[in-house]
Image (cartoon, rainbow, N blue to C red; front, side, top):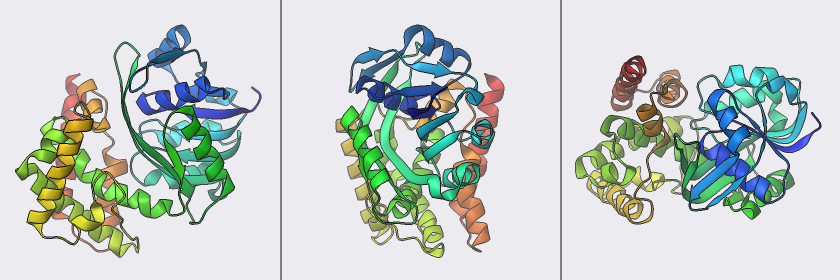
Length: 325
């Protein structure tokens, strides 16, 4: 297969949203998918609903060895099994790779596969849900941020972000992606834990004073990990993470509830991807996300009693649910 512009590994919600928009705007795109999802894409193409309404055909490959090269590889699969999924691509000519997966382990896996100089950091405040029909519900389109892991501006990050943004999925190049990735992770880890345990739409547990208090305490534990790792936390994430680390608990609860009101007004149907996985009976991204935080804390001689409790609880929920399906 000749080199194409964008190869997208994973055809779930966000991968499909990106692929569909890039194809529609004239870019050459190939989706790396398998099983039933690959069959859906070949027979029906990509169909987007919600914030955008359109369908488009797309090139699909099920054997990663068929991909000889791509200007940009976007990893959008669930984190379990990422290393194994990347292994067949080691010999492909990949100019630049980045992952919009949750957590922070993703950058290390890409560097191991393609070399650190080819890897960009990225995080997505973009949401969707893959429906049983194969259609994708596009629910949130705030920003996909892309940047050099070593910091600073770069033409390649700007070029890629501009292409994605022009396609209709909002994206920007940023000079401090590592701080932003950590800032998102500090908030996301707690959000993931509450999504799985409450099984509620996002705004509901953000707005509830009890679960909001738990979330504030989880964010503060995660903030200690970032501080020990020498990472500055910013307010530019799903929650004002930096502020939550400094205000009183009562003030923090009000900030979380304010975020809940915003979700209720603007994205009332939003559900964390972890909750979508739980309902569908898919294994949860535990080790690569909450587990990463717990293990990182141990390396830094920190104790995260609340997050560690949720780590074991979410592990148990994942095992129970997947056994029952």
